[in-house]
Image (tube, rainbow, N blue to C red; front, side, top):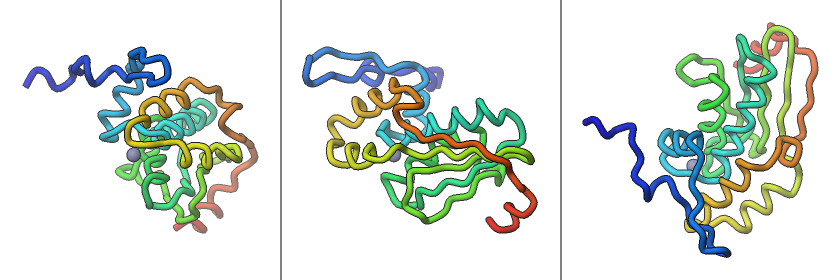
Length: 166
Ligand SMILES: [Zn+2]
């Protein structure tokens, strides 16, 4: 099958309902959609969280995700795995059942906390439908880090920390 990596035109466009204009999805979002199976707000939020983690902690990164395992919040975990290189297979990501859109990234030295700004989750949950989820996702994708996240950096005490997580 030589067509596995190609996208149909229909897949790569999303219709903006207010302007009735077709908007093309960026390649990164198409790849994310293929990985996750659909494109909604929380996988994009996770994707951006993971990017922040990876940018600031480029090596030996591990993650703790506080979303819990219920959808749609748990979609965040896939976004984080996609962009941060913290994956279940490598055993450097842990999910906590805290029902929060928050992740921590750390190595031996640093601890980075990335949390969704208050009010955004409520807005997403109140406005997202099956029909508009790709548009909401695209909106979030184009927002700046500071519009979406409260980011705090500190020191990590990894040995003690990892023991606590397991
Ligand atoms: Zn999802």
